Amino acid sequence: MRMYDLIMKKRNGGVLSPEEIRFMICHYTAGQIPDYQMSAMMMAIYFQGMNEEETLNLTMEMAKSGEMLDLSSIHGIKVDKHSTGGVGDKTSLALGPMVAACGIPVAKMSGRGLGHTGGTIDKLESFPGFSTSIDTEHFIRQVNDIGIAIMGQTKDLAPADKKLYALRDVTATVDNMSLIASSIMSKKLASGADAIVLDVKTGSGAFMKAEEDAFALAGEMVRIGNGAGRHTTAVVSDMDQPLGFAVGNALEVREAIDTLNGKGPEDFVELCLTLGAEMVVAGGRASSQAEARNMLMEKIEDGSALKKLAEFVEAQGGDSSYVYEPEKLPVAAMIKEVKAEKSGWISHIDCDEVGICSLILGGGRETKESDIDLSVGLVLAKKAGDTVQTGDVLVRLYGNDENKLCEAAERYIKACHIGDEPTAPHKFIKGIIRE
Image 1: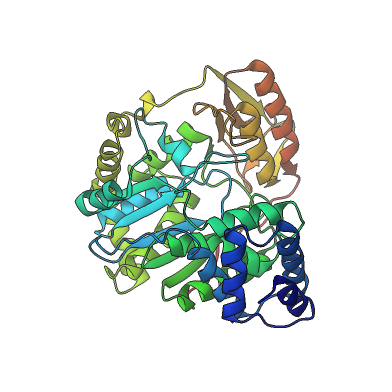
Image 2: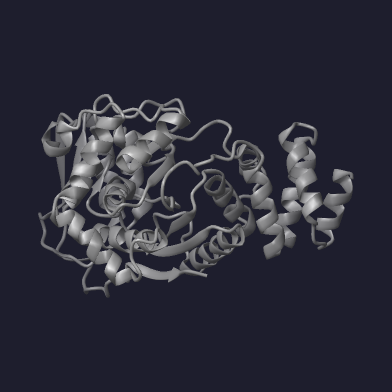
């Protein structure tokens, strides 16, 4: 078998067989196929596309290119949640303890943030001493003991995806539905969950800006997951403005704690309940989404979800007193209020620009080596659809550098659009794909 022949076959619109895809991924991962040939193949796929069977086979071979985590010794049905990413997305911090409190094992691998917001691991490190540097044995034992653990992604998880994504990133072949879906799902399948719930964001702060593209990606990933024998569903949710009010690591942790205390923002609570209901049903603890939502609300109301967060933080070396005393979390030295320059209604907020404001303040990474300031960020006072008067506070910026605060404030004013007429509210949960 020759890579030259496979490139020509795909370039001419042919369908790659399972054996051909296996040859391509195995030999590329091993360094036996050069980047220039794989670049040609990625471009051929970009223009010719892949059918459902090719996409599933590509995903499975990428998943099997490294370690396939074996979670069979964890009791019960393991349900994983994955978000395509957004601004203020602190969902795992509240959702994980809620679902674990319902008796469903939450065994999750997460990464650090790169770009305008921190990742789940960065946010969890707001708790002094917290560490995700745990081995698989510890990880499995902790899930069996308390129902939840989060560990950092291992180097050996889907190495083919790491190589391919780096190549696609510099050859203008990222934006292809099959390649995007296989990249995400290869890591999820390698992570060992029995069922997968996907949160696919759409809007100005999401990777998929157009709603139809988000639904197409969600459908593709659900087909892959179910085709691989994993119970998979996808929720398409709005990311045309930040999720909740807080953006920034410790600020988002505080908002997640507020949510587990029954005082969370309406959109964030709705997302946690919607995703959580899918997870509880997939985990076999409820027969309907309505029953599952009631179970999740009970875990908030009786305090068991908050207690589960404290147990989780303590089990991974963190100071659990911060769960009950969130005022101890890192706080920036300065707060700058950004005020409305005219009266009207907020028509929309450029969500990706809000994320960049957090990055400017130090809440994200320009490169993997960048230091991150856990204390900085933003807390919105007004969101799309709200009425404002001249001089009303739009957002409070938290920072440790006056120049950065001024730069972020100027940027936020341009990102927050105030119109003369009220706008129709956005539908927050756009839809759910289950098969």
